[in-house]
Image (cartoon, rainbow, N blue to C red; front, side):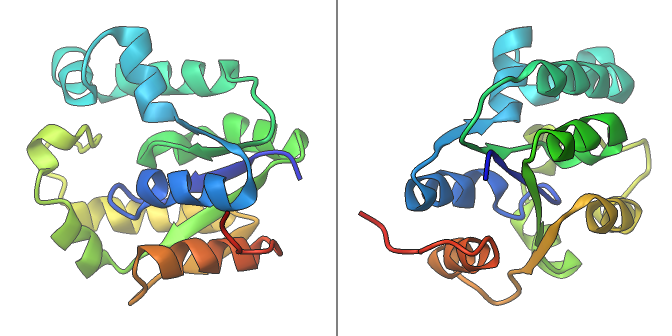
Length: 171
């Protein structure tokens, strides 16, 4: 197995669980949102506020398409799934795309900082609207879907590792 690519809604745990999953699987970890911030020299929300959602997605697309690491757990931004080309590139490289599924109500609770988090919402769009728009994309692009409803962080990591068929013993 090459990279494990985590996709899902903002707040589903891609970054938090991803770090622990990388330790569990003995892989390196990268968060594409952090790569975007480094590339732009600004926080995600600043990029969205100053340049708009389309620009942000273009930068996200470029950053992901230029990532060339191997043996990583990759936490993508929630909007990365809009780029079918990047999802296909991951698959063609032998990477496993894992959708971390969390119920909409839980996502809403977790996104209390929505105004500063760097989520690409259209004017007037709610988190529920965004959820309903993205879920079919996540389900279509994922090789594995891991439902984490009711799981804590450690249980989430274990569930993902088990879905990948890996030993979940941590060092």
